[in-house]
Length: 142
Image (cartoon, rainbow, N blue to C red; front, side, top):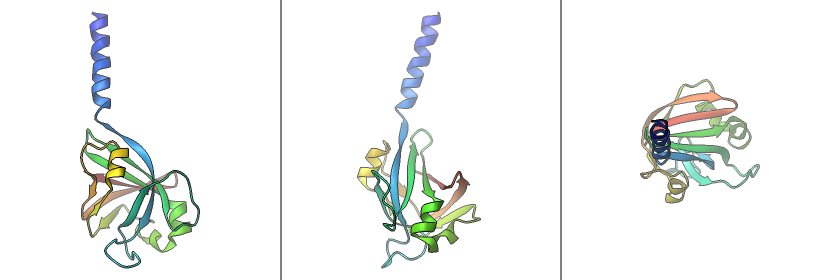
């Protein structure tokens, strides 16, 4: 009986982990992609980051995907926003939500690296924003 219970637990854990995504390190440029020079709030560019490159105009962060709940969380460094895109801090400081005014489609490279089971798209809309340990987190349904 113990073997059956143990095997059931192991099978459940293996099955549930196949639905989980990954946390990847990214670099993001905050701004509206549709506008020259990326003014305003949105995402102008996101790429997978291998290391920290200071003063490149990008904000270091992370992207996590939870396939089982169909959510992704975008984390952006407050320090990097202040250092590399200080005009964008007004969209984060003291806020509990952010509004994307245009859709942003993440690359297939990012979708694959995050082990997402479907393409990653941030649709126009308002999303919750939280702050913890120097990072701003935006929770987005997939």
